[in-house]
Image (cartoon, rainbow, N blue to C red; front, side, top):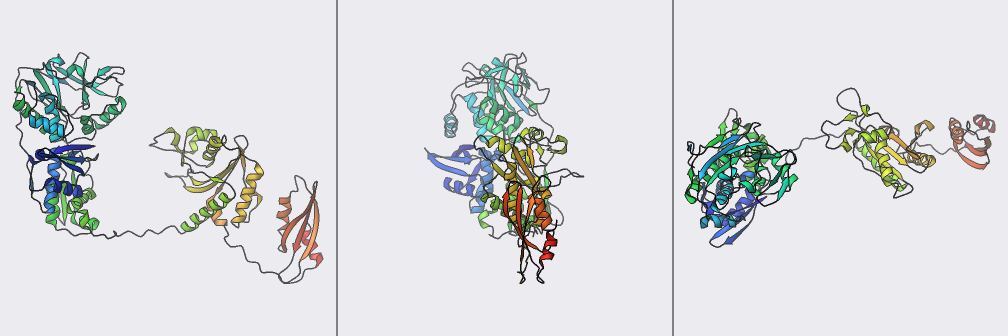
Length: 619
């Protein structure tokens, strides 16, 4: 959000000897970013960025307040000039206005009925509004825009006679109700919007956003209601998004403008109507206030400023900067200070570090020493390097085997659990989930990899995927057991996946048994395995066990086996390597179910006899 203001208008609230270019440069260094300043006739126009948490910038008063605190730091004189508006609290009883807000949808309500004369605004108002990018319409409407730019709080004006009943009822919209806004566009409401009606069910306003045609000021207007209210920012934001309406008033109201600025806008509006529209109050002045907010007090100490900024500032300078920004500083004991946050900073100043930031920006970030802040030494877990080293090794090896790495969320949906034949109750459900797709913490990588295969099998016939990620199985206590696992999935065949696992074990130097290879067939010809990374780390042998070359002769023996379901090559291999004398073995030939294997026996201590070797082969 950007606002435009003029230099001469700013000088009504700021007494300074700084030029427009200097104001631009110095404000941008320590406060709001002034994107440009351009000459306009005998005036200058500032284009200023307003960030979402600093709506107090979005006014003449707010910029003057910032300039008064910043400019003296650069050798310029600057003094804030805040006028005292005459509070009209008595009013008249000629006309009566009834306001009903049973659900307190607008906690603050300020209203008054005035007799006025409609016409053109004075040149200074027209020129200032048009310089700010707001089209001048007539004196009655221009006043509301003028006070919004000046004080930072939106205002609205109704034609009192077009309200008809003299009553304003604040309520929630009914689904399907229709309105026509000031721009002539019809909108159909849901039940989320806050609306005003005149007591007869006829809607007359979309508060905080835009007025309606049926209550707008027209050329025949003689009586008006000057109206200001506070709004729920979330309702304003949601309504503007749903209806596709963006107005300057909505941009202010969705950022929670200062409630005290509403009073200034109200009394300033009355003053302007009296001056430029022959305004006369003809009703009571209606003021409905919310419960008084508790003062926000932040307790801190001077050491925090030095610790974070790296500069030891005199206490008087810290207090002076905060006081110039509108904070009230009270000294405590032992270098403590209590800081009362002003009403226009209640929602962006919350912790002591926020106060340090305020002092630092006014002092000047460019003056802070460029030293790295002291950091606590955090020791990594002992097996940290080992863990990520083996993860890197596994990823590289599987990549060269032709597998594709998948990266999935650690949260999965209920449907993914059920598809994987899992039990929903075994999973931990997130308390603040933002979507049904990421509702449960996964306890296995299988559902995620199955989803990957399902989404990609139409693009490629053969899929070989893997993922290294965290799972969160339940354990006794509040928190789950967070562990890393390797999951591999294919839609090729069982032996393809088995070969991948065996090759990986060999690469990692892991001596394994058949029971260390667990393959599940699920989801119609999808094969899947999951391995605990902690087990891989424990079994990982980066360097093979050294076996010196035996100086003694090797005895070669061939043996033929009848293969069957009960006697497989793996079982032959397992039994053969139970011998400490077997160096290695190789397949010599295979005919039907006849497998011939050659065994190599030797001893590191002596020559073996053939009888000893045959005895080792007797299994």
